Structures are given as structure tokens and as C-alpha cells.
Image 1: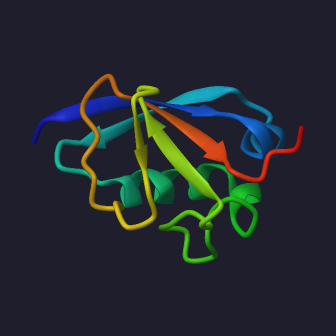
Image 2: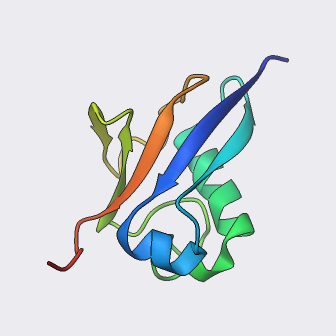
Length: 97
């Protein structure tokens, strides 16, 4: 089974709640965004109910991922399979200014 690593970058409220700007997640090839979200919610339980749904496998709709700053993943794209080296930026659409 091939392993890969992706980088998750926190912005806005997710950065405040985690106290971190980013971390690397090891995955098995074929893993989906829902698997990434599950790992994030287990590692950072403060995100559950604020950024991550209580099921721990999906984002609250006002939050989404940008893949490498080039593509936005919407809530109906939880089956997207990240590639090794991808940078997933966790964005909140309700960030104040």
C-alpha cells in the first residue's frame, strides 16, 4: 500500500483553535478528504463543532479546503483524493475583517 503525505494549513478560526499554522498528515493512497477531516478532528478536538461537523468527517458548510491555492473543494467533494505533496488550506468563509 502506497503512503503519501499532505500538508494542511490552518487560517483564521482554525489557526486560533489549533494554535498551529500547519501540520503534515500521512495518508494511504486512495484516502479521501473525509479521511483528512477525520484525522484533523481527532488531533484537534477544539475544531469539532466550530469548523468540523460533530460527525468528525465533514466540514461545517462555511469552511472549505483550497488545494494548492488553485482549486476550491466544496462540501459535496468529500470523495476528492489528495495527492502526495498537496497543500490543503483550511479556509473559513465567515472570517471577519
